[in-house]
Length: 178
Image (cartoon, rainbow, N blue to C red; front, side):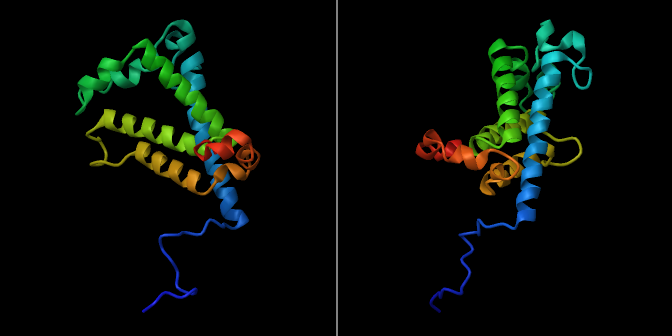
């Protein structure tokens, strides 16, 4: 049977959402952005939540040491624990957390944040393999999936500066930056 204009095409999902759906995606974007931004700030200043003041980056601590050293007994532990405390890895990690947090909270660069954040989260997931509470799935993969949804839903356009950002010349030239 030939396709007609009434036949739904599953490979082309609708990009039109109701305002409520747009707001849900906008709030989800800000919330996940805050998770990244908070991780950056706590590791930078050691506000005592995940990082004690004595281990803050501003006090000479390494933001990667705790997590990566804790992965020593995991499947890829040798690789990841070997990266712990490396100055380049510390800088890359902290710049990543800050960049992801700012991009997602403000809604500019959500596509590139989804890609880079997804890579970061999958690497963090791999550092913990095998999982303790589930054979393979944990919050890192869930957050990575949500980041993809944020990018596909243009979540930066609602409760963010994404619409304005998308009109900038550099973003129109390189749409990955939206």
